[in-house]
Image (tube, rainbow, N blue to C red; front, side):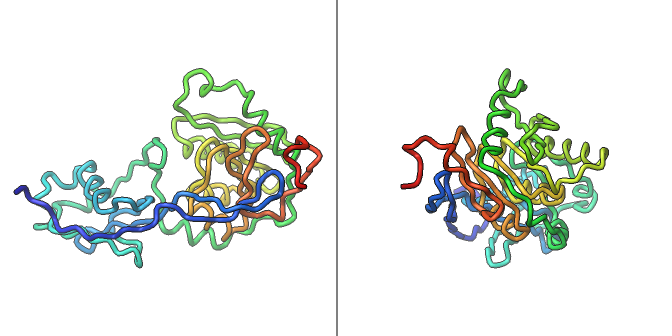
Length: 281
């Protein structure tokens, strides 16, 4: 029988239910992916924090160590134990990892979806962010933004495989649109423009084609954005952070459909915009 390290068994729910309000102002339950932080400790040394659904955290940890070339053979690993109460996974090696400080000193953030690195210090900064409570978004403005993105001349329309982000005024006018192979790069590019041009996010609306993960919400909050819109969905951690900073999240925005999941007090509904068949009775 081939060698296998000792693994813990840590089943967790892969979805999380929140309440969402649709375009007819009706509330219904919505299942979203359960994004979780998982800090990897190797022989009691903190290595990295990964964001994961938690479906197979032990295998994820093993694959990360292998792909980072920190271990060469599975026999080097004695055990991998996950403790969700600490959001941590503890790796015990047989003889330690040689020169681990030098080998992990330089971190490279990849451009693929969900591959960004998030450090714990970011959450400390989030605690000090205050987003404008008086900002408002009309339903008609949301539809204008969604339609602008739909008709935007883009790399995605031609070639696919990219994410796009747009910075809009409170009236729904597009100011900047950036595409990149990863949504993290696209949002960072717009943040750089805003910093360079001294543009405040307080009266702006931010659109992304990617998922509203915790990393995306944190970036939006750091940019001072009261509104974050996506044609995709949100995650549990994205939802949690948005509630923490009181950001308005609008997910699954396509056509006249949208799901308002946090910050409902900022939304101005205009039921006359909907077909009679969609209006509230």
